Image 1 (cartoon, rainbow, N blue to C red):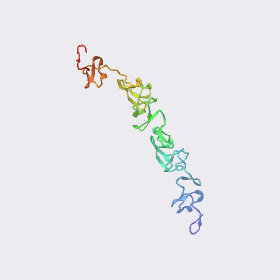
Image 2: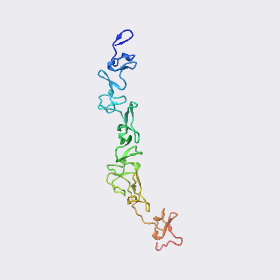
Image 3: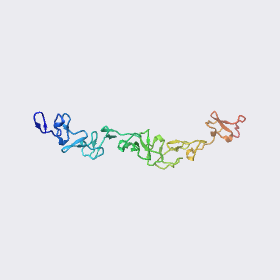
Length: 256
């Protein structure tokens, strides 16, 4: 009971009208919110008293059991959409993308392939890397199971191909790999696909070189480098034309 100013009267039960907390029944652990006897925001009323609400992913049977801002999916309390429950703000907040600070997997966008490792949201598989273009984790070099180019990381210039190419790792069907177009091959440099080296370019292995050899150019043909012109015929590239190397020589149209 409590004294109402005139006499002692019975205390009020859950959801009864009130004007102050002393009017609410102590055993129910409620308080007066100026209008009704209710539970604290972090509690809900169960049978005959207020009890703590259920946290994220804990078992529930109805939404009122869950901490505010979450819903019960019939099994667990959870935030809707790509959100997680932030205990510092006591509400659902947006999940994080790559390289953001995290404490648990739930804080990272799992739909983008991210998990929390070392307090950072990163790709959850070594076969995937983050694509800034697509804003999600995609297959990286030499990893199988790609069906289309969309499965491969475009930031690394990767394509899903089923034929061979001049790369450190041989191409196999359904593997993300570098382009192998003859004459404009690419190779994996450890981070992304890079253009293969042309003739006389510095290299460490065959895989770095373009595979196409072309016929050396003859007199007056367009050129960019000396090696494109036939040195056996005494030609070098001058002003973007294959011309006789020595001023003392002229082109013999009879013997070519």
